[in-house]
Image (tube, rainbow over all chains, first blue to last red; front, side):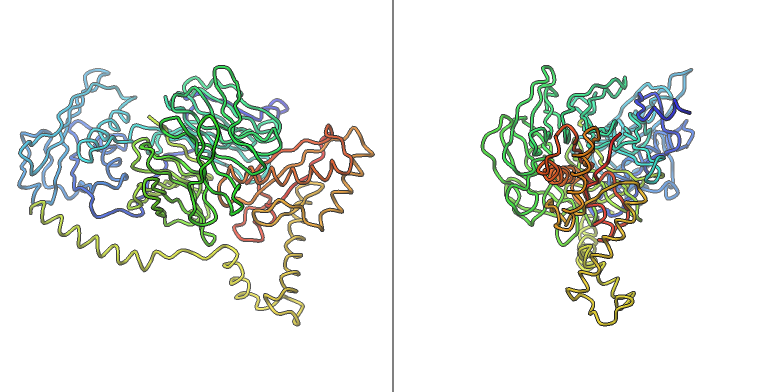
Length: 429
Length: 188
């Protein structure tokens, strides 16, 4: 028993799966009317369970909100190849696009063929692909197929093969409370614990190559910044100065980590060169400066500061320090800024009349837009293709994750089955 | 049916959805406003004192005291020796907490082997990392008073938990107030 008490932190690798927590069930709370009608016919040779390729593709295309996916029981025929497709029948059902496919087992190998068919176009078959997989990577293959369909029909890269990280809190306040750092597929499946601790875990951030996660852990009753390899579980402390060691942010080339340290007495922005551990102080003065994030070109940082005296606002500074420019002027609480991948907008946490929402500021024309209908939002994180963002919010008195499209037209909820979920981070690959 | 027709139907449906949204998309009031209206609806008046008008300065003062007492009780159960509560987005130590902090200083001065960890906290609204910074400011404000009283730096460490270690998990102003605090924790 004594031995058990001593272990307050458990570092794990991707081999240890989370059995108690199922997937985050995606629930579309608000769709939009420009959704593209598409039918995904069950592939021949499939078991028909949740992991069947056609079911995963249906789930992906449904939750992203950009498609109106036909229900199986509405289908009047179930073709498996373009030759047997009766286009006029699908036209009558109101479909624009059709996905058909086959799954064939040959020993341990699984051969998968699918076609994306334009019901109206002259081209007919838009995509015709064949893959070889095994049982372990069928879901990954299905996400890859979803990505191809999304890119073909929407004109942008899909995000179905990307990953998310988040902090899961289980147990009430007290000795049974556990903080878990979780990594999962973008649709919430295959959640795996990277770290379990009795003390808070905060601010997970993916490196741009998707191999490492930086985070803050309070193990040993002090805040330290760790960098952990996602595949091997190996980790190291990169910052453990007196006071705050917080808000790590990877540079786009993964060579540096911006962070917040209060070793001078006041929380300030620093940049650490990860190969030399050399620190450069970026901001100074007596104000709170926190939440640094790199611009996509790596040349500048945005950060949250109360230097103006009118609550937290978002500012921009060169990655080497120097003059500081204020970016937000709308209201008296703007924080947690993140660039969109094109560098043209920042998404942020905005408070007005006690309501905390996620908003987007267009840096090219200063237009500001509230994206979410929820009222207790935090921690926005943008998808690598810039189409959607993840954030933390409250639903039915629980902390859950929400997803919203970058134009605010599509909103989703990802309720966890057990515990509170916060601080989502979308991988960059 | 052709694609063009779908587009028209989609636009009409979109217009309908938009007009529906504009009436239903109403944000809540601030957390504090909500709490006031709830309390008035439920009790009508402060129990046991019929001469005080709800919302009057005396009423606000009494209620603030009641909230503080509640927080103190919760803290006592948690085994924390000393706690200082703060206003929203503020890090200046309230006057009524000074006496208690000076008492801790006297104890630390007479027990040179004793160490304290001064832990700053914030309510869980808003940015989690900004709340870490706010908690640190609060902790540093208390540390400054201990140091002014002559307590050597080696007896003090400071830490901010931000919103990560709430005293209460309620989602109304009374609970938020309990969570905007500094705990002085004695280390062995």
